[in-house]
Image (cartoon, rainbow, N blue to C red; front, side):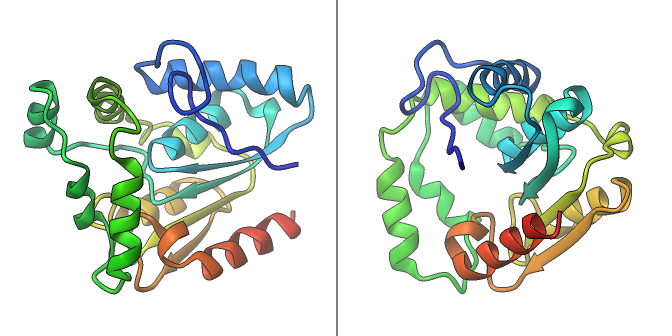
Amino acid sequence: PAYFLDLRGRGQSSGKALTSVKEMAEWLSEWLKQVVGEKPVNLVGHSMGGAITQWMALHYPQQIKAIILVTTGSRLKVNPQFLQELEQGIYDPSSMRRSFSPHTDPGLIEAEIERRKGNVSVEVIRNDYLACNAFDLRNEIHHISCPTLIIAGEDDPSTPPFYSTYMAEQIPGAKLVVLPKSGHYVMLEQTDRFDQELLSFINQL
């Protein structure tokens, strides 16, 4: 089975939203124990989810069979001006337009922006970006020992491809795929190619 997980305090998951990658990984570890048991899983993480996935691979390796890191990095520094706006309670979902590739269908972009309006509170969004800004595993990811696929978007301005290149150089045996004509949301922008790379990797394990 495949699980698409809402982090605590989001979507259909109850409870107070967590405020650090470490806390989110600890919560995920417990969730996996309850739902999956002892069987190791293939964990896919996009952006902040990729940070959580790296933490899981390092601190809970017995629960991980393989990881797929999607448009993420081992350090996720956030624009200080953007953080300042969030501290003031300002967040405009349309700002995510700049995270897509210029080649992406504008209709897809607008639909995604509309879907996100009012979906998560500004407080939760702020805490997520603060968690990303505090995240830094650059000196630790070389200890990741599970099979790893890294997927980057060629036009991603949020986590540019060099983030993925660094991870691929540091994680032993990692495979790097850079998808053309896609930005930060590769799974939306190049769905068929993304699915192909993901399934090919999992089937070869």
